[in-house]
Image 1 (cartoon, each protein chain N blue to C red):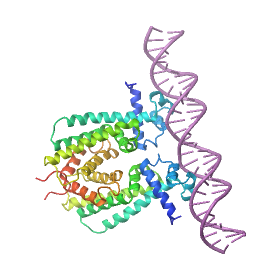
Image 2 (image 1 turned 120 degrees about the vertical axis):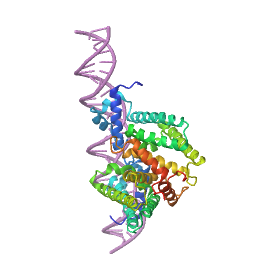
Image 3 (image 1 turned 60 degrees about the horizontal axis):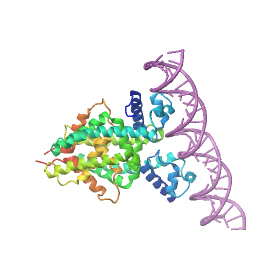
Length: 195
Length: 195
DNA sequence: TAACCTACCAAACACTTGTTAGGGAAGGAG
DNA sequence: CTCCTTCCCTAACAAGTGTTTGGTAGGTTA
């Protein structure tokens, strides 16, 4: 159950790719089975249900993400460095779990109601707390501008970072670190030429 | 056919809300009919198919959007003003067609392949041309920084603007113009305090 | 009144969906 | 060789899907 043989993880990775490409609802278990080289019924030897596959994909991703975030938040960095580290770790996580992030981005909103996916709401709340707290700390320390609505800024940053999962391709032109660097430069310094 | 009686538009608006809330695939024609106060089969008096509802929702939205964009692009503004106007019109369009934008954001990627939705690809291409062109013009005119990857910047801006449809609520705390102003301030000037 | 159009309902259709039950091939353990 | 576990297949299921067909109540027109 808890120890996952390699075949199981292989199928799960395949399912994640199909979910990400077609959407959870539009993905039939037969499509997953096709992509995994087996028949639909055979999936149920490894998994309880289609929903449990989704569950495992999302929770695995979130566990990995929070392991990184917790490290950053515990490091005692200044607000600007914390923001930079959070952004960088987010893009790195997109690099590592691209499919899972795309699924999360697309499906989390409706899953929030379902009791089974309650951890999504918890994660989202912690998420907001970490980012908003960093922004507030930055304003208090006079590292960030005080005239901006902090909640709006949070939404802008959050959205831009995570939506990147829909166009980012590992091994493409830009590495995760390069994308993070460019985005941070944009959001911190702006795109207007300094006069 | 082309002239739409009021009841037809009413149903279409209802369908758009349900599509936006639940996703196109997860939305059954029976749910749409429920929300419209009728039975599933009755929808087919007004529409050819579920897909044609989606088609009409998206094409109506894109037509309205491009009417605004074309006006902005034909105004002969400088790059910074053009960028500002495009962002502002986008947020206004989210205000007016929130459901349609949410559907577009969520479904356009898979629809691109289908011949019926070929206009989505056309629109996307024009979209990229308009935004990239404005950014390039800004760099050439030394209004924007030259050290940023313009394609990445385009993606960042595009994503942030349109994803707003997923959290924006008309009549909420911020108006479309206020959101546009704050976002433009962020992306143009950055959030770091000037020293 | 009679013919007609609009907007809907009732009931079914063929198909796809997630899921289950029973069986069997392959290979290691005794 | 025999037993057992692992992993998959075959075949079916009940429910839900988009869509079609024929009918009908009620208002408008002639």
